[in-house]
Length: 118
Image 1 (cartoon, rainbow, N blue to C red):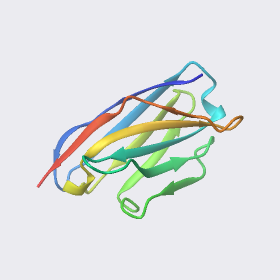
Image 2: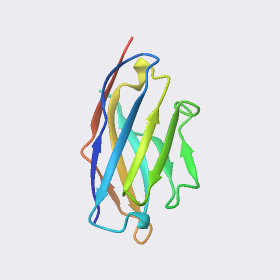
Image 3: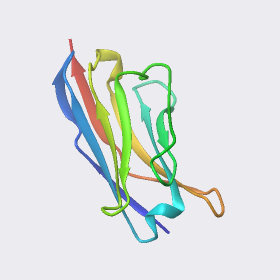
Image 4: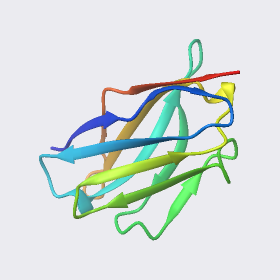
């Protein structure tokens, strides 16, 4: 099964940018659809962005569309989330998820904190 490790979180001012990375290991990376979710304090975990195995098909939540961009590099077994024009409401723990095409199981990373100050 795949293991995921996120990095790139931190503290940024409103209007700033961050790029999150999620490195995968343990299985063939292109066997998985990849995505990012986030969870703010007191709220449920919510979908942010997703990308198919080739990187050619992406999806975004309405909250982040036009500000965030998801991409993947299958040669590096890594998925990225470029976050621009950040807002305080984007503050959350961001989780990387891999969904297997074969059995549709989800595998989660440990999360990385993103804090946007006003």
